[in-house]
Amino acid sequence: LLGEDRGAVLEAIVSRTRFISRYVQAEKNKNHTKKGSEVPEMTRIMGLSTALANPYDLANWIGIDTEGYGVNANKGLYNFRPSVRPVPMVVHIQGFPGRHYCPRMATMNKPCYAAIKDLSPTKPSMIFVASRRQTRLTALDLISHAAGDENPKSFLHCDDTYIDAVAETLNDQNLRHTITFGIGLHHAGLTSKDRETVERLYLEGHIQVLIATATLAWGVNLPAHLVIVKGTEFFDGKTSRYVDYPVTDILQMMGRAGRPQFDKEGVAVIMCEESKKTFLKKFLYEPFPVESCLAERMCETMNAEISIGTINSLSDAVGFLRWTFYARRLKLNPTYYGAASSEDNDVESFLLTVVQNSTQKLEENGCIHIDKSAGTDASIATTPLGRAASNFYLNHATPKQMLNGARSLRKILAQHHDDESKGVELPKQNYIAGDSNSNKAVLSVWKFSTEHSIHTFAIAKILYELSFTHEFNELPVRHNEEELNLELSRGLPWGYDLGKVSFWMDKKKPAGSSILDIMLDPHTKCFLLLQAFIFKSKLPISDYINDMRSVVEQVPRLLAAMQYVALDDDASAAN
Image (cartoon, rainbow, N blue to C red):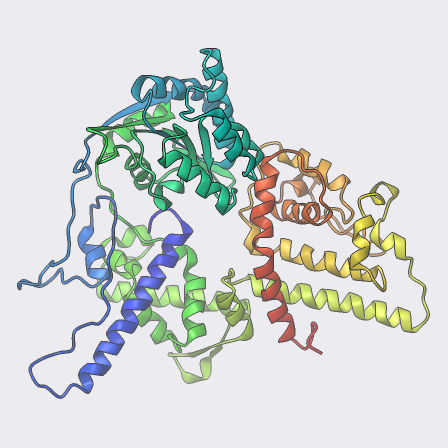
């Protein structure tokens, strides 16, 4: 529930489940003929978490009776101190100076190597880092330090012949290299087969060190004797800056230290920026109150409920919100969420305002229709755009962007059809290449252009519109990558703005923006990566391989959504 977009999704799912469960219970009780007894709630929800400062709020939300005084009061609620562990743990916190993130991460590599050698020379060790790039850089530095000790394969505990054979089966080139030195990589950019191979080698003890991104702490059960949290910050694509991990995430990473069947104690080493040492020492074992992050995805949550028919009016929406963890915390901590006070009238007024603001945004983006003729309690109905956002799991503003893109393309294709009917000759080669430097790279595009090169423009335009949807707002553009994006764009046949395939159109650069500003846009990078994938272009650095994979994986879903939107719209393509 904390620190991630998925927290809001989890809250929405649990709230919907309880809402439906209690509705079914109430209906059954209406028809229940036996007096003096009630039909119990049929759904039971189980939740596991780190230690909490407000367990009663969560327990009440998922259906535990926290307000009664009978034998069933608080039944099923267990809350332990953070220090309660099956295997005791020793924690070391190390501070590192330096304002800039990348140099500070580099200075942590030698202490990482020293910590493994001192605290876990032969037992499994796990290092958590913030990004896929850091997994690679950390592994290469560990190999260098081991080579400096004249034992480069000190982390490998199997025959060279065996590990070389396993390495041949891996897809990721960096992993192929590091695995032969007994160091595994684990992140979302690897194929599932590569991840499974690394996990198996680590569990069987063939490799001693596993370097993983922080998401592994929540996903896979791979315990270790030593856990090193290398840096307590990650790059936030929304704000384009480095932000701190939630303390619960750090606790989850530390929780991997100590193997109940093998260790008498676990060891955790937290490496952080110097100024954060005192904070971590104080709060690492102080349980934090869990707050809701549903507000960040309120529009998407409301749209989903309207789309499936759970919400049909403003009063329904307010009623649904009362079932959320957001509403419970709003009453107990009103200033955190912006409410005037915890009084019932103020809470109800605030929830109504939240609903009105969310439904207004949804209406502006064409996701819902509000019938205000019904008086103060306006009725709400979904639209095709709203169904698209819900069915294809999109940001609430994305379907309208897709609709506008489809209409724009249709206008251009209609103009081309008119010109053809008038006998106007359009140059075929120039539509595709635009300049002689692109001719070589563009040869493979002819398979898209069986009749006329305008078809190539149409494909480029569709992918361009998809790239500039909200779905790619958080694609990372790292430090100095604007220069790499510019270099990449020069060798791609469609350009960064369709300029090479739409030279007959007037292209206006946004006022006050330089070419490097445009290259800093995550949507521009997304469009370049899609072109690089289609034309098999060489990427500037290996980080772009993982970025490209994450982009390409989303395209089928987005294309299906765009087709759904366009087929429903007479003004775009349906006719």
